[in-house]
Length: 561
Ligand SMILES: Cc1cc2nc3c(=O)[nH]c(=O)nc-3n(C[C@H](O)[C@H](O)[C@H](O)COP(=O)(O)OP(=O)(O)OC[C@H]3O[C@@H](n4cnc5c(N)ncnc54)[C@H](O)[C@@H]3O)c2cc1C
Image (cartoon, rainbow, N blue to C red; front, side, top):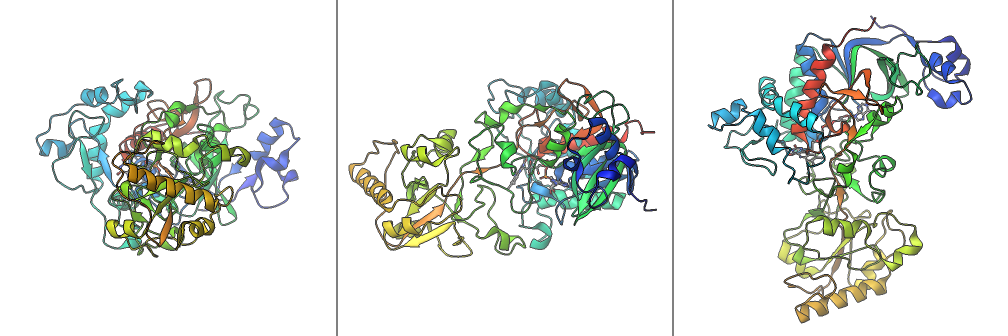
């Protein structure tokens, strides 16, 4: 039966609108204790043993696992559909330790070997990981892969391959769920993971509330003011989620799991780790699903700690990547948006897939080359993000601003591009002109700090063409100079690097309980997925394992009185 939300008496005095609507801002000047009492929820709209925010890869694993332990489960999901980034992912899941599929292909593996492979200090991507978490993760690899199989996830049954951090073949790929783009969103293999998990979760009785955004974590306030005694035994009791403009309070009798998927979409938050990551950097997986750091911020307001923060700027792994699909806003290397996708009106363009960066030059927003375009390392990315440029001084910049690929009609022929919609997005991300100067004048994009000076772009192209004649790039040492930019029409295509993984997040222990800044457990609060920090492993293997652990542990937590 649906129960109504009741507020503490002191809270009611301060409210001017909505049941729970305005939160702490309306309470400025009120003593912390009053605020705590004011935020108390004495009657919940809904109640479940385990409540989860986020129906992506980690949230769905958590939900099924909790349900398998007999817990009732509600997931709140902000989007109009499940899946998160995992829906549009490549579905590559390197889990090992002796999975059923590894055995089928005669591969011998063990949890110890998985652990050793992921704690090798030569691996700069994983060097700064919390080894306690890696150990737990390694021990749960095989069980998690088999759990995915048991819950209907299908993999391409071909001999698995090695990945960077492996001495044993572990990489299997999920099968695309359906040929219907409305179901898969973009036809990506990751749909085979999340749709299968969704089906299993629903069949087992997990309730998924779509379009519900987590807006508040409610904690037991009986033992004192909110932040000062952050972890002093005060238990998370439930959450408030918003649908349209209404708020719904949901009690979490055993535990609440944050599975909101990380922070890369939140500019202020991501700049805590790297101040250069200003707004021009787009995020792979958007506009389908966002990583707004909601879970992290709400937990931090309860005193939660972040963990493994250096991983974001370690310059290894996929915090930032060079784009492969140019001329469109969301040009991530492994995601080309299909014009038939229901998301396409928001995507704007699929992008021109670059076969060889020999076919173009890259310039910054001032029309200057800044690095060897053929370089795929963090050398190139660092130059994009903030190479010193005298013109930048006056512009109050932090990140390096837009990067534009400049090319000509011959490049188009060689690359076999069709430089028109839907392949490119002419609304600010792709331009064409008969002269270089006109091209510079046409570039109008919200992230340009100032118009590109036509003269500078002309000089840049002329200089580059002279390097091709000389067979040498004295400025940036680009090898094998092959083609001039000389035949009209000329093109400018968005080629700004894109952000990918959130490689840091909330501090958790091996049971996925969230810890506060003093290293104490915040009772009743769990986290998994990209919102959890401490282990900089890319993607699905990390988030599925910890999702499953979080669901199991929350389901077995003591029920609150
Ligand atoms: C294009 C692309 C390709 C990738 N390919 C691979 C790959 O091949 N292999 C691999 O291992 N990894 C891959 N990844 C990474 C992988 O998809 C992610 O690491 C993984 O999906 C993260 O899981 P998660 O559960 O933490 O977040 P997500 O799967 O993103 O799910 C988080 C969910 O939380 C929801 N949410 C956010 N805020 C709120 C809120 N306030 N209230 C309620 N709900 C909220 C979101 O809408 C989302 O549905 C890829 C990612 C992308 C974008």
